[in-house]
Amino acid sequence: RAWQEKVERIGNLNYPDEARRKGLKGRLLISVYVAKDGRVRKIKLHRSSGYRVLDDAAVRIVKLAAPFAAFPKELAAQTDVLVITRTWTFYNEAGLAMDR
Image (cartoon, rainbow, N blue to C red; front, side):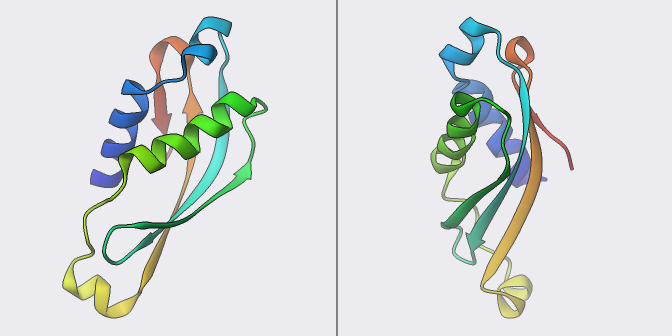
């Protein structure tokens, strides 16, 4: 939950001006591969919003929000990389939100 809140906060602060001006809205599906030290290893866009500016913004927002908190010891003992997959919705005036 903390990861999602951080990304949404950064996303709303860095919402793409071009998208806001043009009234663009869209949903995309993205996976973020986070290493146990909190660094982003990979970002994969599975489904486009239909707008390059929104897709590019999603990748940029993840990079701006990184690094994330290191894994707790219990999780770090079980895995080296955590894959977080979310549907993001760019709402234009309302900003960015993610489905859980």
